[in-house]
Length: 273
Image (cartoon, rainbow, N blue to C red; front, side, top):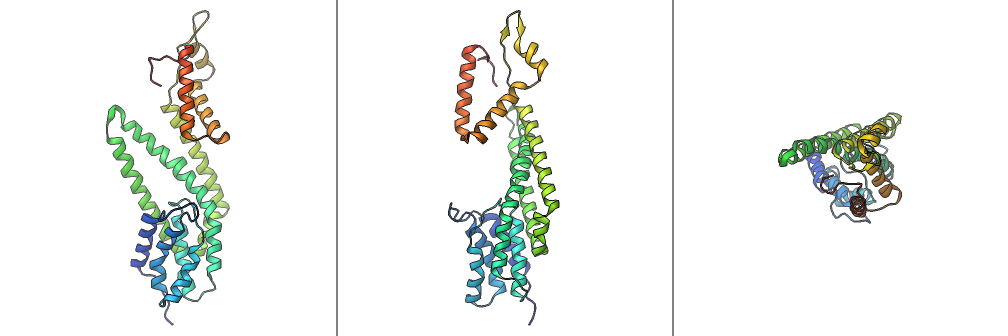
């Protein structure tokens, strides 16, 4: 019996299906399940000849699935390699594949959110904001182009690397080295967000204390430069992380704080913060 090998055409179609359709028919009940099914469909059709075999193989991917979709591409590629091995008679079944998928959802989501939302996006936005000064459209063009190029090339690399490694990718993703990388990414993301906050948030006070002492330059700046922007960021973080408030609610609270601050003379109504 000849060994079954997935063609480049089938793999490319599978990748495109996941790239464009990972949120296909998205719902709170199924999340990315149907997007995963769409990605595996061309592979299953090529590996199995009869409709019954194809139907049985696709049952594996009808189970609930949800992760960070960009980095999660590696899971789709990995299961493509496992499905190919299964079709060739290796000791792999649907239960094993599903167990691997379920086990990787959480770790990949944590790494992906830290890498993309916590690191890549703030860095690109920071650069784009600098390029947008004076109303220039270059910042928006830069962000759209670079983000999509990095995302496309990165997802393609992860898909084919997952396919190449198959089950060996598990250790690469959830092993000790992966945990160290994840912690490093989280730390980098925290530093980047702090730098962006310090650069783009400007809050000062014109209040003058008795004795003609300027509160901003005479007191706050000598204690801790940028202490007011830091306080604002930490206040927003506390509201959203500890009090579980929605961003819109936090923005309304900030408007209220600004209004009260102006009435008390703590903020200058003529300045734009």
